[in-house]
View 1 (cartoon, helix red, strand yellow):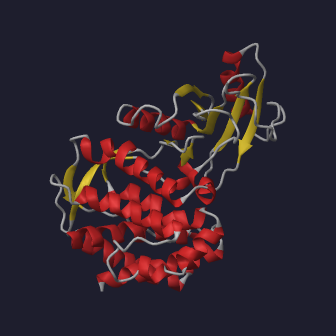
View 2 (cartoon, rainbow, N blue to C red):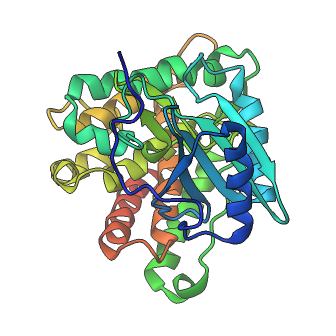
Length: 349
């Protein structure tokens, strides 16, 4: 028999939460549906997001994952949920439990899919990667791209081949006076113009598909969360680059350092599809790219291999530049991202 109260963590009452009164009111409204059961809370680390993320645990019941943000951002989350809900397989995204709005703020609550005992408040792919085998990690990546997102990327029947339109990026704040930043933006602008001559598949995307937005159940099944950036009419390569580029900075540093030993091969002038590596992280990157290449060269798409390579370089440069432009990222992350942007840009010389 599975139990739902195994986890013993830093739970607290609603009054003890370090949140604005408006957000506490929204949590209280969500909690009233479980009366008379008491509800305990746990705040998750925010990272770079402005949203507050809370685990709400009704006694004897499975927990909820609650996202608290501005009403505008929560409405975007609801819209993204509706876009993906009927395209993703059952249990590939958590059941929607509640949506509440207050004055200028909102909350969305999902039922936490555990697959059994609640041993971890949230088990994410970036953390689980260290403990799992390379084989299981590759299975999860295949599940994400060849099962969960495949309906959105390739099988929806609505994707179409369009000229690539990479987003414009600009330096803000301290980055605006950084000479290296201006050089990197110039490299990206050149790649952006070259990619604009290529056609790639456009359709439905998750939009923010990185390892921290992939939960992993007890049985190592991936569950996607955070749908505020999901949209139609976007290049499919966005999801792959958004997953790959930040992964090296999200995992245990020991995994990343082994990956960086072969960094020039991963982000150099040679073809991005490289031989399988014994490094766990390099093997994961190879599997992400393999799924993309398989989709882009399928009969309905038929992109030439060299065009897939160039187009994906452009999206990787975009994802890495965004990491570099965030001055609140640590210096090592920014330096590494800059080096990889330079390496990728050589293919556009």
